[in-house]
Figure 1 (cartoon, rainbow, N blue to C red):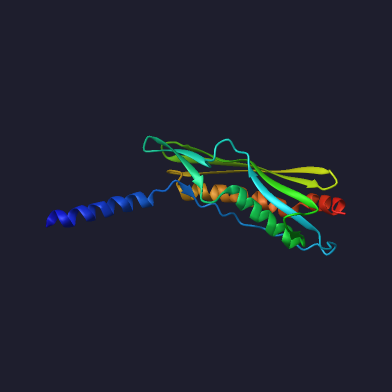
Figure 2: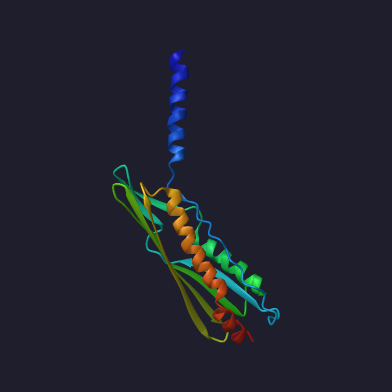
Length: 192
């Protein structure tokens, strides 16, 4: 009788222990939207994403003597594609399959370098994102957005701290994209 009770309870505790330690970072940066451009007149653009990173891990940390790879909760291509779509829609563009200008947002680099000592941690995140605009007339423009963020603190670099650093870096890149009008100027000049 005791075995029938103890084994399921023990298994439940073991599963609960596994559930609390995850290797996934909840990537959800703040999305800044630009103001609407009143000069736009029904220009349709298409948007897609690509991830050019060699390694899909956002960070690698040493936990209990094992090197653990931390991966994003969402596909970064679609996350950044969604961000760009929201920004371009806010500007006044229509997003469709066959646009006058094709935009591709490319994740070149996004990584958190995590270093831990006896009592301190250091997290440095770097992001390198490109937007490639290609018009139907053959014109092309590439715009790069880069950001670096560093945070240091006491004890260990938890997943929450690493996630916060990644979200801050991506949020800075998305904010830079919202403030920059060069892609929009290219679209307006080449969409005719």
